[in-house]
Amino acid sequence: MDFGNFYQLIAKGPLAPWLETLPAQIAAWQRESLHGHFKNWDRSVEYLPSLTPEKLDLLHSVSADSSQLTDRQRGGIEKLLRNLMPWRKGPYSLYGVNIDTEWRSDWKWERVLPHISPLAGRTVLDVGCGSGYHMWRMIGAGAHLVVGIDPMQLFLCQFEAVRKLLGGDQRAHLLPLGIEQLPELKAFDTVFSMGVLYHRRSPLDHLYQLKNQLVSGGELVLETLVIEGDDQQVLVPGERYAQMRNVYFIPTTGALKNWLEKCGFVDVRIADYSVTSTDEQRRTSWMTSESLAEFLDPNDPTKTVEGYPAPLRAVLVATKP
Image (cartoon, rainbow, N blue to C red; front, side, top):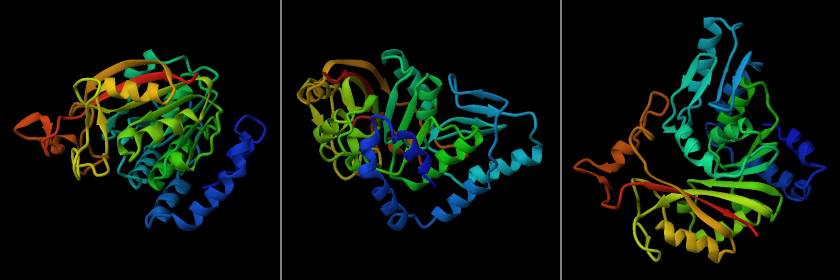
């Protein structure tokens, strides 16, 4: 994994101060943090062909195709992509290979997009980006540059695999970092944090970290689990919530709006509010372990197996003054 192109890309712009810390962090990651399967994942990415698609759609989907490929080549691509399972965020359609991911992330994107400022020409940060599905949709919506951060090595390999099959697009880059490793860059026009806040021990610190990446007037797009109730209610689950560990605080939308305003955001608005269905998050042939259906009470799908309210998600949009 070579990050040199990204370093060159940001060397002369508002992200240039990041180069004071970023190369050392990446070097440390390369020395110390490689998962036991990383070599196999990396090899699968290496063996994938670098293709220039005849048909490319990032506006309505993440899909690419070419009439030049044989069935054997398509089969080889599918085998290499299956080496990178489980695929959680998507879906992708790549040269006849339809990666049916655990999450229908396209549904979330369709809920979010109508409520945010146009991304055309913007520099965007996607925190906890997973395999980078939404990053490609941001590029499709006209973003100038999208930087995703996620410390999971598998997600980096999935992202780089998709990039090779999309023609090597350099408008999107994924870095294996957590938000706490970023300096206060104050350089992004839009920051997305989707599905991250409830995993943070200190949610207000997370909101400040997001705010510190935005330019003045920049926009935060925050998607997270919420509960029903008044503006003061927050659920603090026990060891697990819907079988997930490390779920710390799940507020009502009103409490979450209060948190954002307490952190100094303005024009805070609730853009969307939806129950997560077993059609949106489910087991597939590309993600074969348990999914939402197994995390809900079989006798009462309005509750998790632990007895908490079933997953409900909200999108809030806010501005840094």
